[in-house]
Image 1 (cartoon, rainbow, N blue to C red):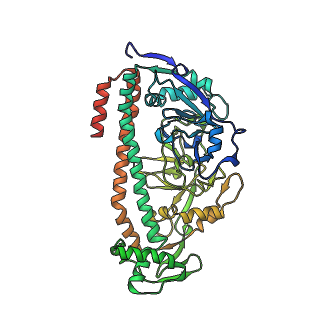
Image 2: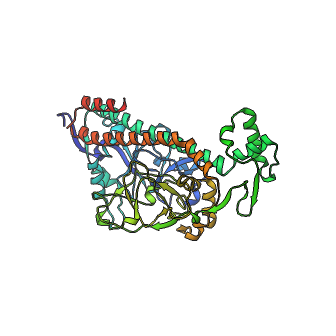
Image 3: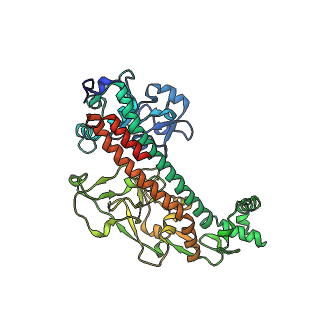
Length: 467
């Protein structure tokens, strides 16, 4: 470290470290559909606040609990469980509530650049120190005293801002790639919904041929008529689809010539297992379970941990494998039935006991088709309708296997895959770049904070990576 760099305690560099409101101050019944967002531990990602399923409170409650509101530059921690994770509050989150179960760190702006601080708090040393000093036998707990005692490197403000700029430029590109991938996934899923759930190409063909439209589909047909009139309908894709419908008891009207199938006709399930806590975090493959599935579906890797022990080969997950949650540990049911797919950059993983792997050992079908079918709103509604339990909701294997869908011809399945191929390749490219930038950011972080790497050298490395 430079001669002007200091090592202080975190509390000495802060204006305040404040817990969120206790449950007696904010009850479950106080949350509303529209209002001020309340940041909960589940909303704390890797230095960012996520809004998926975020709780909200009224303006009146926000004023009543004003001492707990966050400002731009604060850092929010989870008070229990995954206590080393933190998120920097950005401008768009100013005035939100530091919710129940969280801690708010507010820095002394005369001493600390908050973005620099947020990166330092994500260093391996800070994470390990917090976990080691957290209290609680069954679940780690964090409090203001523990956080206040965390050793903290305090360079002069100009150096802090320079370090924050270097790491922030990498972090912003990582976040941009993630958002681009979310958009690409949304486009592919929207196309799947249009073709295989709403049957838009069949409606287009029926309208063009003057064929009768079932009464139940007239509203959707009006939308498609407008698309045809505006020239936005994809007539090239529609040529592979029929121009008439057939009625089925399971799903109502489906394209003529398609068959009704169900998940159980094509896959079997392999359940995961439990793992020794003492071997978690040791070098080895990732453990993949509920923590690796996003709410409403999709792969999530910001909380992955490794496992240093052996496990059976039949619960190994490799790129392209699909795994599903058939239960949820909350009443919200956000993870009930959620599905994820192992991305190409994850070499392998071990399935945990809270998820099941789809084994395609029965009638052939596109794995993409099954995966996208399990991402549709119709499937999510099915899961909630057939779930059982009060506190922990679950979906029986038999009900999962019974989920029905309209199975298109092989030609239409392959046509869909060719349409989304460029999207998949761009997604893979973004993911690979994100991994490279993440590794660089996490390598530069401890070297900059320790003074091992000079700021100009780090800036050059970052510029080369972003070029």
